[in-house]
Length: 316
Length: 320
Image (tube, rainbow over all chains, first blue to last red):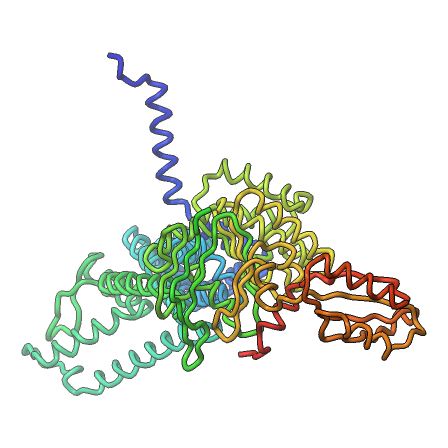
C-alpha cells in the first residue's frame, strides 16, 4: 500500500520519538550541578573522608566481634553474626550520611543561586521551576547514591561472611534511597524559602535535631508510664495504645526504624509484618520501615511541591 | 513599526516607597531605546517588571501582545535579560556555560553546538571557548553574557547597565556589538548612567526620576523641549578686552546668557558660550557683526545639544 512506512522509516521514526522523550527527561540542571561539584575539591574530599570513616568503624566493629569469641573461624553462625554486624554498621552509617550530608548538599541549591546572583538569569529562561527543583534534587541524589555505591565494596565484607539475607539487602536499599530523597528534599525546601544558604542549612539541621529530641522525649515519657512495661497477660487497651504510639514514633526515625525492622524480621522471618510489643499484647503490625518509607515519600512530595511553588513566584 | 513593548499605567511600591509611579511607555519594534535617570529613579524596577521578575502592583505590561503577568513563560521566549549585577557559573567552561543556558531554553543539542560556535565568533571570544568562565575579564564576561542572551534568538534584549565596570575600550566594544545586534532587527532596551553611550546608540530615550517618566523622545525632540535656544561657542585671542567683548556680544539681537569659560588648559584664547535665538542666516550675521567690530575671533561654532544637558535640565537630581 502507498502509505505503508518502510522498515527504515519505522526505525528512524521511533528513534525520533525516543529523542523527543529523552529531550523532555533531559534536565540541564543535573549535568551542570554534577559538573560543578566534580570539578571542585569538595566532592573528592567528601568521598574520601566518608569512605575512610566507614572503613575505620567497620574495622573496629569487626575486630571487637572477632575478639569476643575464642575460636571464630570454626563457628559459622558466629561468622554470620559478624557479617550481620558489619552490614548493619554500614547501613546505619549510610543512613547517618543521608541525614547529615543530604541537607548540606541541597541547602545551598536555590539560596546559593540567589547569593551568586545567577537566580534571576535562570528565572528569565523558559526553564520551569519544577525542572529547576527536580534537577537540583536529582543531582544531589545522584551524588549521594555515588557515595553509597562507593561503600559497596566495604559492605561486601558482610556478604563474604554471610548472615545477610536478600530481604535485608532490599529493605536497606529502599530505606537508604527514601532517606536520601527525604533529607535532600528537606535541605532543598529550606533553600527555596530562605535567602541565605546559612539560614537554610541551620533551618534544615534544626528540624533534624529537634525531631530527634522530640522523639527521644516522647519515647522517654511513654516508657515512664507504668502500663507500658506491665507484664500481666490480660490484654490491656491502654498498653496496646502505648505500644502502637511507640511503633508510630519509631517509624518516623530511619535509624530506629531500621533497627526495629531488623529485630522484627529476625523474629517473624517476614519482611512485611511481625509481632510488636510484649507477649501480653503482641500486636501484628507492618515492619517500621514500611510506614517510615511511606511517610518520608509523602513528606518529600510535599516539600518538593512547596519548593516549586516558592521558586516559581515572581518577587513582590 | 508597531509597538513591541507596551507599558500601561504601571505602578510598583516597596513598603512606603513608590519605586515606579504611573508609567506609560511604548517601544517600537527594532528600536534601540535608552532609559536614564538618577539612582533610585525606578529604572531597574521597570526593567525587572518587564522581564517577569517582579510583579507590578497595577497596570499592564505586554511584550508582543503577551502579558508579562499571565503569559510569563511565553514572554520569556521573547526576551533576553542582562541584569546590572550578575553572577556566573565560574567552574564551567565558556562553551558549557552557553550550552547550559541553551538547554534551559529547550534548544536541541545539535543546534546548540552550532549556535555556540556562531555566537562566540560574533562576540569575539571563540579563542576562550574551553576556558573556565572564572578566568575571563569583566569585559569578556559581559560579552559572554551577550552571547548567552542571544542563544534563543529573542526579539527583545533588556540590558541593565551593560557598560557597568568596563574600561573605556571595553565600553566602546560593547557599544559596537550592540549596534551590530540592533542591525539584526532586535529591539534593545538599555538602562545606563553613561549618557554618551545612550546618546550614541539609542534612537529614543526616556528619562525617569523618582518613579516618574519625566521626558521621552528622540534626542532632538528632548533638546527642543528642554531648550529651544541654540548654544554658540566663540573663542578670541588672549589679551582681548573681556568687558568690551561681552558688551559687543550682548548687544547683538537674539543673544543671551553670555558666559566666559575658564580654561586652565588653554591660556592662548578666551572662550565664550552664549545662547542664541535665530536661524542660520542670523547666526552668519552675528559672525559678520563680530568681525566688523574688530574682535580677534579664532573660533566660531554651534555647540550641539547633548543628552547630559537634557538630563540636567529635566531632572532635579533627587536620588531616591
